[in-house]
Length: 454
Image (cartoon, rainbow, N blue to C red; front, side, top):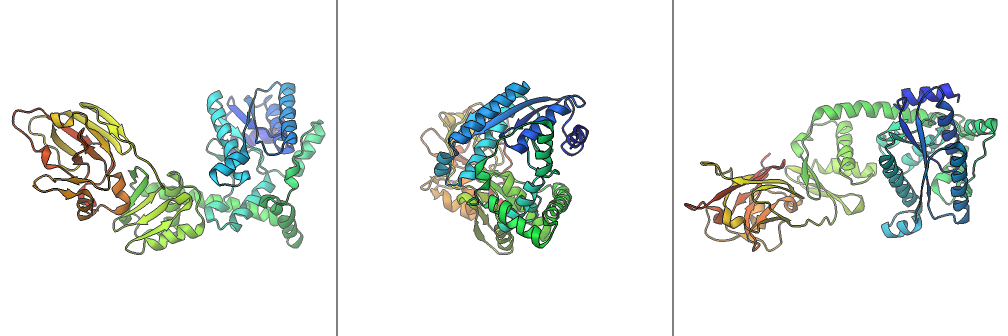
């Protein structure tokens, strides 16, 4: 790859504009060293700022420290700013119950992202090449991915750019040899204990031997999948499906999902799950949620202890064990809570609120008031009634679905008694009294009102 070709790749495929600042993820291996050298050589015709970042993962002992020393010397020689971190990937792996490779990747990307933001860089450049792409497509297929997984890696994905994605690793090593630039070899790259290395050294070579061009065919498959996914993404954007924020996830009206073609529905579900932090799901999980949407009610297990709950009117995606802290209510004023924003202001003459998302309440009851989640033994005397009723029963009678009940905000008096279940109904104690100051408590979040009637 010439410097001109590299500059063209930066502008056309990576969307990296002249004059921008790039943070190169520099491991010391041939691929990342070639990437750094190409960036530096491109500076003559394509103005840009270059910095580097290196993470020592605490996995390979002395060899890993030698890599760090090599990278430091290389950046000093090239007069490139270097930012480093030393982490304990094995300890992170044990703490979070994930593989060491996944732990190292998470820690590395966290450091790259935070460093990019701290130094004001515009992108992080990774040195993935064409063989990495073929391996990724095959790995995703083996693990049961859907079409999105077959997209594998892109030249540009958010703040990440991969200018070498169309290059063969042999070409990169030949380039380094031609300019006399040494690099480091990671001995673990040959260890077939790791699945990616088995794919690289055993499975793909056998595929190439039996069907020459298999690796390139996998890369073409990724490009075709990316093209199709881009089309579907535009279609999904046009749907404008409303999403209701929950304290532990998100909810979507089932009516907005009904009638969608399975190809669209699967992608809508995948986007919802991804954007609300539930982690990658196997294709079979997405299909199980799609099947559940055909039933009256069902619960599907997601990764990390999360759930997809299909109720009569909503699909709810909820994380496991999300604690909700009590929030003191600012009277008067605006209060941001885990449920959404509350506004409290003196009641104008004649304004009583709708009893659902806004309610007039005597000011004296709001002294020490706070917002909390429902508690198991909660009771309240609903407005217009004389006897207490379990809050759970009120929610059931109103059609509040099980997965949404923890996200109903409860306005309590200082003694913990319920004044107002937002979106549901107020308590009898909120009834206006003559010659007393009245306040309006308004729940300003996008939340369905009582009955959850869709």
